[in-house]
Amino acid sequence: MISPGGTVTDAASRLQGPAGALVADAELPREGGHNRPVTQVAVGVLFQANGQFLLTTRPPGKAYAGHWEFPGGKIEAGETLAQALTRELQEELGITIHDPQPWKTERIDYPHALVELHFCQVHRWTGALQMKEGQDFSWQQLPVTVTPVLPGTLPVLAWLAQAQSSISNSALPTAA
Image (cartoon, rainbow, N blue to C red; front, top):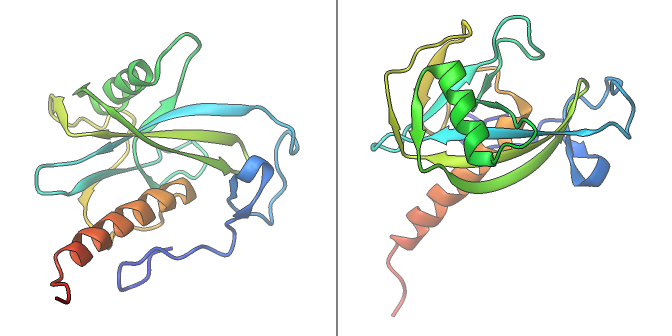
């Protein structure tokens, strides 16, 4: 959840789960039980020069449809993280990314899947955004103004808030 002041707070459903995963909707049963396979996912955090980042909605017909997330998708067998992210963003958004930078990884235990999200920062791409899966998009900054936000998006918003706080604090004068 994002508080009105722009800070990220833990949703009541975010608990520590299998292998340190954050648990989404903990009150719901897990499809496949707790020993289900981990799905590897490439996720792009696209930044404009002004610092705004791209969020898109989950397409109709998918789990958590209409929730806002960073775009991406499953890493297929034999693909590198960069290859998977390039393919996914071409398929979903119609853009070609350049030089994605691996950033952080987070495991999320959703009722429908256990996923390991590999987040990459993306600062360069070519092509205009085309929402090829019927999703919406929004360029955002902290605090985000779109809801609902997918649980797997919350850690990134927290990392961005922490980085923003570090930058703000480093600009403060220090005592002599």
